[in-house]
Amino acid sequence: MSKYIDKEQSVATHLIELRQRLLRCFMAVLIIFLCLFYFANELYTWLSAPLSTLLPEGTSMIATDVTSPFFAPFKLTLVLSAFLAMPFLLHQAWSFIAPGLYLHEKRLAIPLLLSSIFLFYLGISFAYFVVFPLIFDFFTSVGPENIAVMTDISSYLNFVIKLFFAFGIVFEIPVATLLLLWSRVVSVEELTSKRAYVIVGCFVLGMLMTPPDIISQSLLAVPMWMLFELGILLGGLIVKHTTRD
Image (cartoon, rainbow, N blue to C red; front, side, top):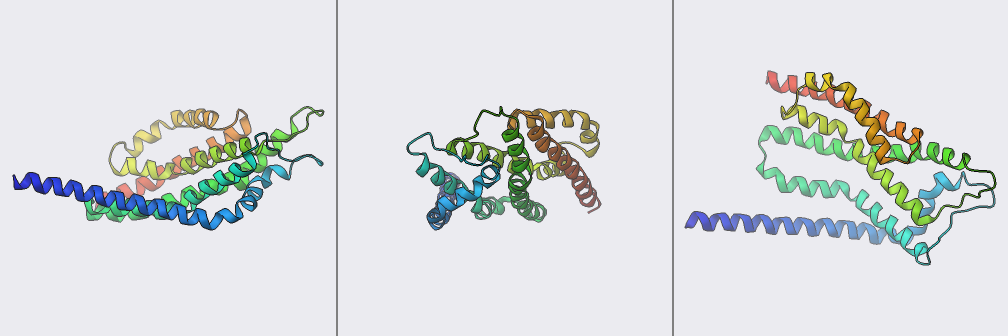
């Protein structure tokens, strides 16, 4: 009977801790949002720069909905707040699961946590500074001459957020590959033998996750492949090191 009560108390304790950490995550995003909301319009101007600088002279982005001039910057600020709070959010997740990990698992988990944060931000930066200028230049130059390019601000925001998430997640491939190798789910030899299928899969995912043009598809697929190769390289080194230990 006492064991059953102790088990119930343990579950209740974990649930209380989980609620507290979720509240901390919510408050972190809220605080960042309140700090950034005053600059919401400036943030949207910065986000739209890769497209607005390529628009023909005399044209601009438009709002087809009455509420778009308010809700588009509002949504951007909220998403940006979540992005900026990501290190704190992942730290809260780590603090919750860390007590249940062994020492050797903690030694690997901390570098993986830091790498995940870095790679997520790297993926977003790659999308903004490399991918956006190329695909927007392509889209604004292929249309008929008698068509004025005037993109809706809400449509543009949804488009770039989708690509931000796509590239942020895709850049986590080395971490995912390393975890698969470290947990012995697959071996380096098995992944290497399936390289051709992985390359095809990268281009299929690139086609599904990006606009329907070969440029943006390749800009996502090629980094996915390179990151997969990096994950195999790092995973092989770590597996050899842990095997020797």
